[in-house]
Structures are given as C-alpha cells and as structure tokens.
Amino acid sequence: MGKGEEKAVLEAAERLYLCLDAVAPGTVISYGALAAQAGVPRGARWAGRVLRHLPTDSTLPWYRVLRGDGTLGLTGAAGARQRDALVQEGHRLESTTRGWRLARPIPWSPYR
Image 1 (cartoon, rainbow, N blue to C red):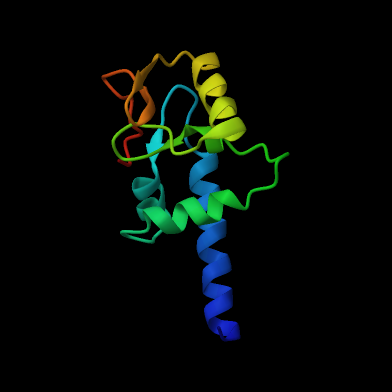
Image 2: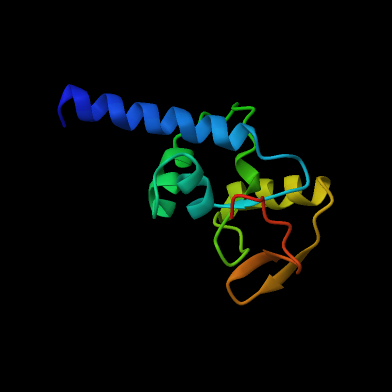
C-alpha cells in the first residue's frame, strides 16, 4: 500500500470514529450504515475490522454498532460487555438461534 492509499485509509477510519461518536445514547446503528456515513458505501465488514482495533479503554460507543439484522456481532467476553452496555442504556434483548438481538422495533440511527 502506498503512502497515498495509507493516508486515505487512516482518514476513512478517523471519519468512522467521528460518526460512531455521534451515535446518541438509546440508539444503535448497523455496521453498514456506519461505514456509509463515514463515506465507505458497502463497507460493513471494513467497519467491523476498524472497530476490532479500538483500544480496550476507548470511550467511543462501539457497543451501539450491530449487524444489519439487529443481532450483536460480538461473542464471548466482548459480546457480554456489549449486551450489558445495551441493557444499561435501556434496550431490551432477546435470545435467538443467531445469538442476542435487540427486541423489535429496533431503534436504528437515522443513518441506517
């Protein structure tokens, strides 16, 4: 990857962090919608990879990002932290065959 490409990737990641920081308490956003808002259409997987590298002490609301179907994208200890944080914000969760999902209706961010 050249310097120009590397700079573009870093700038896109910074836009993603700014968009994530703007997701209000009580709302959630899908990985795809977050990526699109950051200027990377069809970038749901990219958004997941960027968020995976957030420091563990990050204050960004990473837990407000879900799969497009409303299920939590994380498992294990990270999934438990995400589930606890969402419940603390007042979301109701339900268990499904794919894991935990927000109970309907999903309070999507207006950027969905």
